[in-house]
Length: 267
Length: 258
Image (cartoon, rainbow over all chains, first blue to last red; front, side, top):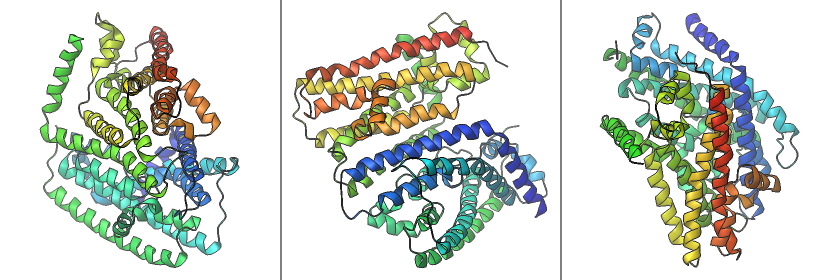
């Protein structure tokens, strides 16, 4: 277990070195947050009734997704691992006495957490001091805060097992562009980062409840901003745990099969 | 021009070497654009209009902007991926050849996978044109063609300008994506829906408004000023500073090749 944690730490510390990239990323996030809000404000000003989200809820939703963006977006791929699979260096990984799957999982979690940590606070702080209507408000109740923090922690794990699964599939397809790209785009839409899920057509929302994607970003964030009632939150936390177990098991089994028939690319 | 087609044929052949990979990537590209389309459909499911523009109006502006971008991505890929050329030192190779450097950049890479996006945007445009409420006449058809043309020009100018920025920074930073992707995402909507500051930005600094808003007002009959019909052509002027910047950067360029 200790050795896996050191992979996590290694990636985490390396990630913290890229501060210029983080600064650029931060401005990207701010710009996109600003942009989405402008579009939604134009929509809301055009008037419509029975909207699934209030404008201030939506603005909070956008700022929180933007600040945690590096942690929750679903089309992430670790270039290092993909290259390893493609150019055959995976052979070195297989020589190590550790489990390949757990090793990748820790690397991915470490990398993404380090990228997030550098961005979360600045984005949130700037969003807090923006003039109305763009401003973010962090008002919440203690129970909502506690439960959504638990949900966020589980969401990070869920993201980790899902993303690791892409890389395991990549061991079969040897290419990250085809099928994996399609899954990634689907995951991106269904996790609610493109349009918040309450705006989806009803039937799609129903299907989506049975898929893992919305439990990564949509659920913890909407729980926090008060768009999902707490009672529903507790059921969804159970669903999160179930999905973590399923995707973890699936990834691990597939990884074992892949290792058995692994062909080493290149020479 | 015939040289460009020769390059084109070579790239086409090389991409078709890997057939399954080509087909799958081609489909995957369709999906990436789909998420934008999905956003618009979802939002207009809830809202009947955005500042007086209907869904088909927005689909038209969306189609025009995405068409321009996808066109540049497909046929002028080399300039889009300029930073890798510089990093790998391959740019020096181009400098040795006795042809115009910008032209060579256009030909350097072609991505037919991205052509799926061009096709997809054309389908969106057809859907929009069939459903939009416009009294078509000669002027309006001309406006539409000008708008499509200027969409290509403006993204070309942005790509050239950001390529010249690579001379300074070597690596294309994420900031560049803010300019290309961010402007593209916003300009999917007629820019008149935004607040004053944004409208000024998109009129004078990155003139997306000339592509999809001012002529669009004429197209929809919201304005009768026939001059608006020609304003997309003003984007050609925007190429001048972009090309000037590029050549200035080129003068300062010292190879970093390996």
